[in-house]
Amino acid sequence: MKYKVYRIGTHPRDLLEPEREELAKVDAEQIVLPRLEGDDLVSKARDADGIIDVDSPITGSDMESMPNLKVVMRTGVGVDVIDVEAATELGIAVVCVPDLWIREVANHAFALILACNRKLLSLDYSIRSDNWTPIIPSPVGSIHGEILGIVGFGRIGRTLSARARAFEMKVVAYDPYLPKEIFDEFGVESVPFDKLLEVSDYISVHSPKTDETTNLFDNNAFTKMKKTAYLINTSRGSVINQDDLIQSLMNGQIAGAGLDVLKQEPPLKNDPILDMENVILTPHSSYFSDNAIRELPVRCGREVGLVLTGKKPLNLVNPKVLEKIKLAD
Image (tube, rainbow, N blue to C red; front, side, top):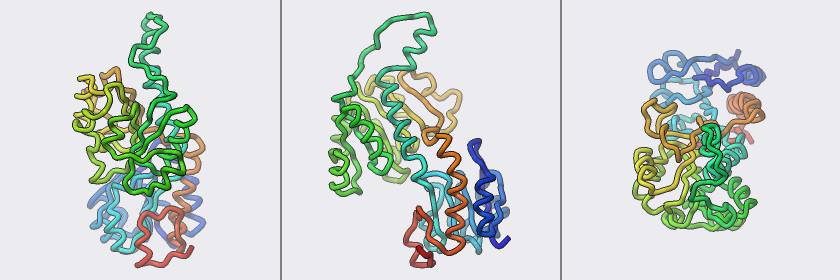
C-alpha cells in the first residue's frame, strides 16, 4: 500500500477493523503495535506516514526521526501526550476527536452531581447492610436553586450547562479565554475563578491539561469552597492536587467529590481515595456509549486518510501547520 499508518496502543474498547477499512480506502496499511515510547517507538515506526496514538508520549525528537510522518492522530480529546509545537515546526498535522462524546461526558458529569447530591452509593450500601432508614444524611441540597460552577466552558461545559439549567440550577462558569458573548448565549454568568469557588454548590471541571491548569484545585482553592460543596472532575486528573483533595475531604473542608479521572490510573491499592465514603469513583469512562465507540475507529481512519491525501481534517489541533503544509478544504 502507498502509506503506512501505525496504531500505537490498544484499548479494550477499540474496534480495529472499521479503522483498517477506512485507511484502506486511501491505500494506507494499518499496522498495530503495543504501547511504545522513545527509542522503542522510533525503531518500530520509523517509516510511518501516520500515527494513531492511544496514549503514548510522542516527542519532537520522535517525530523528527520519522521522515515520512505527516499526521499524528490522538484517539481522544486531550493531546497533552503529543508535542504539538514541535509537530507544527516539523509540518506534521495533529488531529483529535473532541466532538464524539460531548453529550456522554456532560451526562456523566451530571450523573456524578446527582449521585453526590442524593448520596446514592451510601444509601445503596446502607440497604444492603440491612439498614433501612428513609432519610438522606445532611448536607442535602435541593439541586433546583443551587449553583453549578463550570471550570472550562468549551463544548462539554456548555452542554452540561444546558442540563443543569433544565434542573433549575443557576450556572456560573470560569474560562478566561472566551468572550462574554459565549456565556450570554448559554444563559451562564462569567465569573472569576475565586468567585466561582466561593459561590458554587457543585463545581464541574472541564479543562485540558496544561501548565496553567495543573494543580488548579489545591488546598488554596479548597479553602475558598463551601463546606457543603462537591467537586466533579471528568477532565484530567492533574487538574486536581489529589493529596490536597484527600486532606480537604478528611477535614470536612468540602463535602465530597465525584471523580472519573485520577492522578494515577488505575489507582494503587493503598491509595486513600479508595477508602473515602464521600467520594464516588468511575474508571475514566465518561466518554463511553455504544454509539460513540462504534464511530471512533471510523473517524480515526477517516481523519488520518484526509491528511494523507492532502485534505484538511475536521479537527486540526495545530492550524498554524497550514503555513508549512497545504491541506485543501
